[in-house]
Image (cartoon, rainbow, N blue to C red; front, side, top):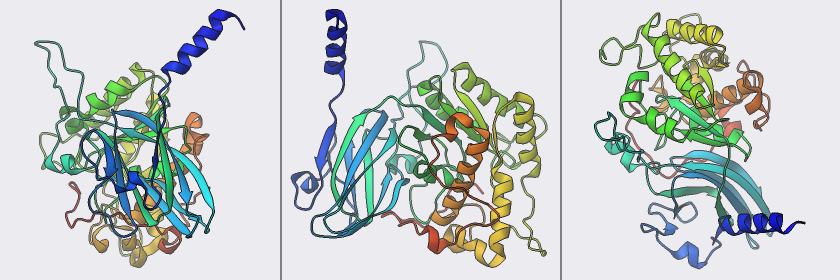
Length: 402
């Protein structure tokens, strides 16, 4: 090998970041530490088995490799990241068995590149008190281990990887607390460890508010060629009683969708349109009442006219609810079914399965990263089959929007 090539390889190796490994086996020193700013350790609120572990890190994408198992005990481990993003579900280990798994986690802070003097904009995303309470807009990566977790170690290293950005409302966002959940926070578990999901969706958001809160600016600031942007708005945009953010399905709604599409394409990313899931309102014949039709049709039309891949979650959600029927469908929704818009873990999982299935047909470059098996919205699995371990944080507060 020429000396110049060898020097290049050595320089690259020297510049490569060293992975960080933490011993989380019972009685280890890493597991005994309580998290404090700038370091790593256990977060408050854990139980005798379930726990949260955080590592101070700058924003970016990270590969997390976990070694699961225990020489003395069997285990069944579910792993979530940040605000309850599902990464691994029900990984069983026998006594003395060890299994290694890896996944990518995107972490972020509210900071934005400050605009030049006299230019409009801001230096950070506009956050609500609820946002600030989440394990999302902070300076650390947080992992939650649930079920009967047996965690020997975790290894973390920064990684350059394509990123799937999500822009949307409460039916997409990473819901912070049980029992609410959204399809965006279930999607990571259905993709391989070569793609990171960056869920920027916000409860109560509209196309306009997502921009004025600088969430769109934040998302675009990190976007690079080859990334994807999934765009799903409608539930709140259709509210005439919200005059500052209302958009008409025939005029301003498609115009705003096209703005998001253009911004993604300008950066070499791939926009994908998603129709909003329907609300759970059954007619007397057992069919779902149409409350979003004009907006779903507008999304379909923009997708056709602008040659944008379409994930028709509106159609799939109707099929799922009708297949479950009026008696069972409430078990897929937040607040014991009293909430007809927002889902629980089971419902969010079903919608994410529908999204993953549609990716296979509509987004070929992303399809190869889908690991979920085939899914038929007309024959959804039962809640007992899905069985997602609930997170440690609970709240009676409903997500914003409806």
